[in-house]
Amino acid sequence: MTNYKAKSYQMNILLLSNKVPYPPKDGGAIAILNLARGFVADGNKVTILSMNTAKHHINIADIPFSLRNAINFKVVDVPATINMIAAARNLLFSKLPYSLERFISDKYLDELTKLLKSKNFDVVQLEGLYLSYCIDTIRNYSDALISLRAHNIEHEIWQRVAAGTHNIIKRVYLNNLAKRILKCKISILNKYDVLVPITDRDEMFFARLGNNKPAFVSQTGVFIDELKPATENCDYPSVFAIGALDWAPNQEGLLWFIKNVWPDVLQAFADLKFYVAGRNAPKWLEDILLDTNGLEYIGEVEDAHEFINSKAVMIVPLFSGSGMRIKIIEGMALQKCIITTSIGMEGIDGINAHNILVADDAKSFENAIFDVLNNSELFSRIGVNAREFISENFDNRLLSRQLLDFYKSQLLMRRQKGNE
Image (cartoon, rainbow, N blue to C red):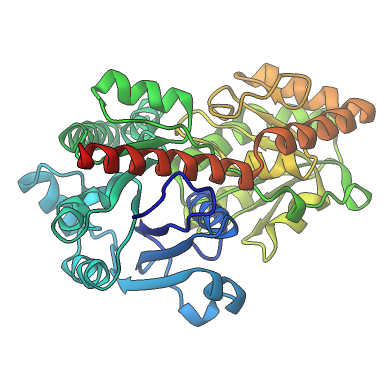
């Protein structure tokens, strides 16, 4: 009989994701891969079944051998491309959100079925709402505990983006998308066995929505020993931003900063440089970045940590989105002085003016930048406190072990109920 009480018990865990979590260059990929690595470090077997999409397509051979040796990666080609005709057809003839419908794949379900028939899994973890259509297949072929890991509140992201959109047609479409995502979320509520939100706020949202399944908040952690600050290489003073430039909340925040904050900052610090790094920027955004005085557009960087280490003040002006901002966690671990908004702080619980700076309007953002550029001691102190905060609160090994203990307790209760 399986002894789920035993700390040394090795579980067999299957993660389902709608993109290959390698390379770990965006928050979603980092969140999936770090947790998988944490599970493995604690002695468990991990398989990741991913959709190999056109946007994030990868050759398995490109994943380092050491990682492939530790984690069993399986991929299924699912294009999931955005097609305007398909989007229009979805809008007129479907009730599903298009952002979910394009990931529905018979090929993926076939591969999942083969995997479930060939192996016994203790836990199947769905990495987000878009994998929820797999629940029935899992039930048909496995007794595994089904976990929905809620990376964010998807409909809220689009509500916030819509609120900041001036184009009426686009705003109507985004609000419609948000409503469909919310309805989809309600339709799958409690079909899973356990819920794993990433923030307390997200857990409270699911509770208000009607979740009655056991929930465990599991924040995304980092391997602090792999994130080494290099303050001697820091270009102080300088300002920088890094993130996926095809993600609407990042685009929105960056444009807001360029329009409302950067001109006054540049006027006060004539030689200051604002560096912007990130991949997949659309041409219209590249044109704006290349045409902005004092801004150096870097594009995609080979080593994000090296880039972060080389610059001084990290800005994360977010006004939409939900869940956690992994780049903030990584930046704090690298001893960066970071300025962000209250929305950017969700799920992190740092202390304003101690280990991070929080500013929700243009004047506050300007003042925060002025403060740390005029006071190198303040700049350094916030960075040192930031790393200490991450080391104490976001150790990936500890966070993944706590989630494993939660899974084991749920499996044990299920076994005990089965024996009654």
